[in-house]
Length: 293
Length: 293
Image (cartoon, rainbow over all chains, first blue to last red):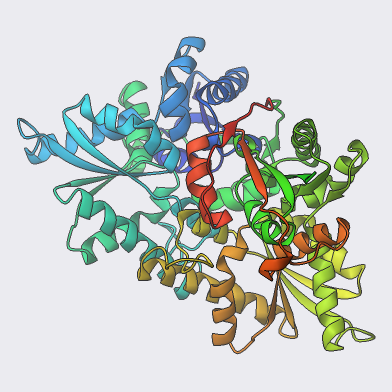
């Protein structure tokens, strides 16, 4: 019997976490909820976000979830404890796995220890203001510099990105050039502030779609930082929690193909259109659900 | 006794309408409400937006408003009738004045009449999807092509704009170059779709901050359309409604300096910081108000 894993986000971004989970924990049934009617969470108060996150968590539990992934940086930053207290199942957020992956990278390079590693975190304004990554990194002996990049989410949602990880390039050259220039500006400012950074943490579930462009820009700027993706780190945490399923990269190790159900609290058509870009494959059969105001 | 005029928007954008009102209807007391806790209205349902707009309108009425300006395109598009029915005072939206100004421009040029003028409307995704500008223009014999420009609001809120109408340029050259390139892409696509357009209507209260950049880009593209600003058109409508106060451009015609009070439903500090950019002068003494969920 496949484990049922519930994944929720305020919108589409959490689909990048699901995208990493599908090959890594393939023998599972996934139920994804995008709380699109109430996005963005970022501008809401802590109490409101906790209320939203709890109603999403309860809905996924009703759908049979045995493990819950809070695939939303804002909800992970502000409401993870409340969700954990309320749910009788394991709950995984995106921030702690990202910080742990950064610490593991430093340990691997032998760069942590006494001096402490420096991490650059790119995130939304709301996540930066919560300082959740700085706290999680500090607890692991790392110094984090958090850089808000408000234009990256709308650029990704407009599809002005040069690649999708798979398949041919989307969008034309001029649009990708805009995104590249925005990245040069943000990364240039961030590296000017924290020039000793060795690792870059993608602290927003939209940013994995820009990973290639970010790596190219870091190279151009002469700072080829190691890029760590919270979505990928979160998927690895879930795999470990489920007993070391481990990556099923070799065809022989894949036990079964994962199955998915999708729910959204607003426009199903928009969810299917935008969602496919984040999941890297067709998002179909999305059902509308009303979780109230 | 100065008239009290209530102005509301889901955020800061409506301050561009207030900015036009201040010199035009100078002998008034203004009460501005930014419903920042519940923004953006664009992704909400019609019922929710009407509920939000009514609570904002009632709050401003309680503050003594004798005339109400719905300085928000989404609320004007989806909830103006509900607000008018509920309020015992005149209510002015931003869409009808914009469309009327476009029609007046065509009439002035002798270009309307049998053939019908073509107008290009730049707006947010939500305003475009409502087709409120297309309907208002059609009722005046104009054909409107509506172009959604989702990156312009975040670019303005990031301050990546080359001018503020007053004072020295803000932001550095690379940031303004990004905005210019985004405008070239959006306007290029819009003019390819509607090459016969003679007038460009700014259908979002954020866009007046980009007016200079938009006019430069239109010139570069070889389509120097006449730009009409809904904020300006709305201020003129209010002036006419109040009995032809008319523009008090000559120093002698100004009766009194307008006074302003500001309320916001979320972060007062952010409102003061961002608001000043939209109003073109300091926004101070903002008070927090709770209008509920």
